[in-house]
Length: 377
Image (tube, rainbow, N blue to C red):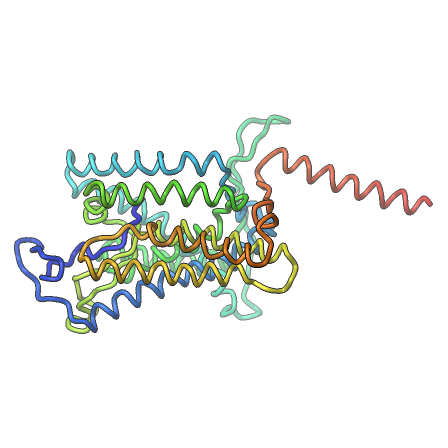
């Protein structure tokens, strides 16, 4: 999991080293400002829209759009799993041919990217279809077993409009597979980020603090303690990061001197910010105080990361600055408003948890029985 902000392809005097045996001309101040300003904007878009869509996702009843709820146990294990994955990739790149590994990864992310981009653009594309568009419903269903022991493995509902979106996304996928162009990379990266913020839900604020705290340590260790994360980020040819050229003004769309931002720096704070938006809505005060506070904190934290990186000319673990900002600012607001207890007691049930489903059924049955009793009276 990549989670560092850097300019890995920059071989200019600014970073103090050659790239591919040649020395590139220093990036201009305008090019640097454009690159990091664009990265900041691209990071904000999936967080904002992903958080809004996470509210609808939490209320949705479509099995194909059910969120995946992260529990405190998942949060505690995640940094360990991420570290093992990162180290495994590092060793793979050291032992095996980088070309063949990236070919395999390209095919894998080609499929995932098409699906993620299709899911992302589907709500926007629906506005452009005419009212008389022949829209048919489909369902992809895989089950295991038979009779009463039959269990659903995949239950995905889609329509003709979704197939059109899938076709458009496939065009971007082929473009990425053939050219590895940075714009195609960013389209997939934005789609992955938005889907992550929308579909990954923290069950409470405490779980969010555990997850962000663990990844805070993970990020600092693998960026400052070793060269593993930066090496993997440079070698890994997959849309797991957003990139923007610092020499765009000089070379146009064929620019190749990139600054980058790992998707982990977007999704991890993003799911916490989305949780705070759902907490805001649960308060029923018609205000989004905690959401806007954490959103502003994210802008501050990422801006500080860029500033520190520019001063020290070294890749920075963005979560080092994002985690204290995104957690600290909302907690301070809660302290000022006297809502700390409400914040940490807010709980979201897992729609896939059998206990939650049973409790929901029992509540429905109780409401129905009460209604019958009233009618009888």
